[in-house]
Structures are given as C-alpha cells and as structure tokens.
Image 1 (tube, rainbow, N blue to C red):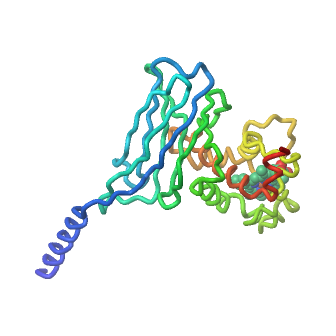
Image 2: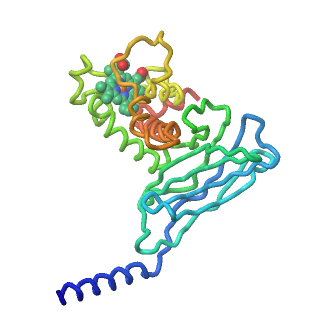
Image 3: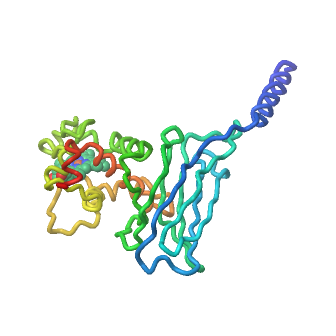
Length: 265
Ligand code: HEC
C-alpha cells in the first residue's frame, strides 16, 4: 500500500516535470501567400484569418490576420510555436477564413505533417471556382509540396490501391470484383492529349453530382463514402474537399510523362 503511494507520488512528479519541460520552437507553418480573385475581390473591409491548429491538441493554435492588398494579394509570415512536452503534435490543420463584414467563410483547409513542411505555400483562390467542397483555393505548383503529395498517397493507399494497384497500374487485388483491370492512373494525362484537369478528375472521383449521361460506372462514388466517413463533422463537404484535393495532386504526381502535363511549349 505504502509502495503504491510512493509510486503514485513519483508518477505525479514525473508528470509535473513532463509538463514543465521547457518548450522547443517548431515551425508549424511555412510562409503562406496568395491571390484572391472572383466575386468582387478584393473588397473593402475584407479580412483573412489563418488559423493553424494542432490536430492532437486542439486548444493550442496560432492565429494570423491580414487584409488583402488592393491588387488581391495576401501573405502570412511563417509560424513558429513553442511546443511544450505534452503538446507536441505531428500534424497541423490550417484554416483560411475570409471575413467580409458579418459574413465568414472558410475558403481553404489543409493538413500538414510537420516533418514534411517545405518552402512557402502559394495559394490561388478563385471564389468562383466550383467550390462545392469549400475549397476555392488551390495550392500553386502542388507537386513541389511533399505534405500535399504524401497526404494524397495516404488516402490513395486506403481507398484506391485495392483496385488501381499501389503504383496506379490497375493491378489491385480487388480487380476481379469490377470485372477487369481499371484504367492505368499513370496515363490520365496521356489519355487526354497531355491535359491533367484537376477539376474534371476530382469531380469524377467525387462522383455524386455527375450527370446521368455519364452512364453507370464500376468505380464507387467516393463522395458518398467520404460523406459517411465525415458524418460527425459539421463541415463534412469541406473535409471531402481536403481529401479530394490531395488525392488528385497525388494522381498528378503519378503521371508518367511530365512534358505531357505541361503541354506543348
Ligand atoms: C472497386 C474498384 C475501384 C476502386 C476502389 C477505385 N476505383 Fe477508380 N476506377 C475503377 C474503375 C473500374 C474505373 C473505370 C471507370 C468505370 O467504369 O468506373 C476507374 C476509373 C478511375 C479514374 C478515371 C481515369 C481516367 O483516365 O478517366 C480515376 C481518376 C480513378 N478511377 C481514381 C480513383 C481514386 C482516386 C480512387 C480512390 C479514392 C479510386 N479510383 C478507387 C475502379 C476503382
């Protein structure tokens, strides 16, 4: 009994010491800059808030605020946080929120892995971009950002590789269930005369709103599946957008002929 008491005391001392470990600085978000167009932007009084949130420790976050410049540009400084022992996080969520008067709207969400962060992130936000998924901002040159490509790879392995194969060749184990090999995902651009249209590809994968004349398809409608996955979140369509954006970037990274994606000079 006495031993248990001593143990409890020791354990709580270790815990207190753990909390008191002096924090270390970590880069949690690189500099983020971008442009904001469409729907009358830039507009008088428009503000952008960037919230970087620890995924494992939601009370810890960083908030940055800027006003879009008259030319429509905006930029946030790189963000460092002091991380105390308990609050260490491997993943961060970024939310970019546009405020005009009383109106608020999240226009970009992303999930970073701290270890994969690279250089500055440039965003191109077109408020008229089909934004069914709450993601009117694209990351410019996405293939240069490891966090985005590997986020897509994680989703791909989980949802897509069973049919399309780990390498996209179409030789996944579940191929028999769809009556034959699905198309080679490394040749999406080649099949379209070198064009890789992110909106078209993400709409196809999402699938919920494809017009009936596209006919029946063997591939599951991922919008439905992800919608169930995210059911408990109020912003589930936007979370679907995060998943789709990164998986589409991953598919873009698989394209065999880089020159084909860029198109003729
Ligand atoms: C159950 C098997 C299966 C799974 C799982 C699957 N697909 Fe497919 N996919 C197919 C089949 C089959 C096709 C061919 C079109 C059709 O008939 O549906 C296809 C077509 C595609 C195409 C169109 C290629 C082109 O050039 O037109 C893309 C893009 C695609 N899949 C991406 C994905 C992604 C991303 C995932 C995971 C989120 C995924 N697929 C999961 C079976 C699957």
